[in-house]
Length: 308
Image 1 (spheres, rainbow, N blue to C red):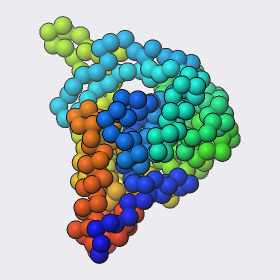
Image 2 (tube, rainbow, N blue to C red):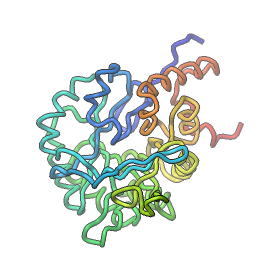
Image 3 (tube, rainbow, N blue to C red):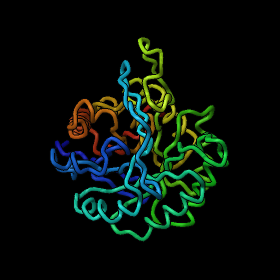
Image 4 (cartoon, one colour):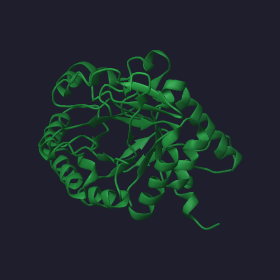
């Protein structure tokens, strides 16, 4: 076959030029990275989590390196949805790639209000719901750990927008497939998994937690086996496309997630080790397809589930 296999990827109603996304958080609003490389080289960008009002985030320290990973407790620092629409979205529209807005609320109603505001804006391909947020009405328990609340938020957003609804699941649950099934039934068109694992670190000299918020979210290669297992499980139990997230730093990692059932992958912590990781992954995927004489990356989705 030729050396130009198809990398086009479909996530429900959203079509990507390749299956590599920038995950929410580390890529910000693409201002800094756009100075390093054409953002159009990415399949899409999931912007930093947006809330109704501006947030300064958690007190420092907010980042700590761990073996094979990173703990962060940034605390959803962002300028608020109105500033995003006014100052960031017009520029993002011109980057030549799909833009997905990640939204975060502290009550179910806030998710609906955010969806309604963003539904009126041009240039967005989809909304990704961060249901790992604490539910202030329920003592701070994350929305995403209970199927009923995860479904409620998905349903409220679905009612307020015509945009495709993606739901980003938390790994800090006992049964990931139960949560996945609940949000799909409520209207989720794509599932992103996984968000960070809850963790912490202690400074033994100070005898105190390192992070100012005490707890943080663990990301990076350390969580890859957990994320991969959850993609595998959800692929077997649901019929919607999946975005695999968790420790993806090279094309081999990406291929594992794709063969486990992910239609696309998102790079997060990998950007901190090498900002050009996504391009390297895309090139590696293309080389693999040529080597294996595969016509399309979509032919490999879920390949590890098939009998040989």
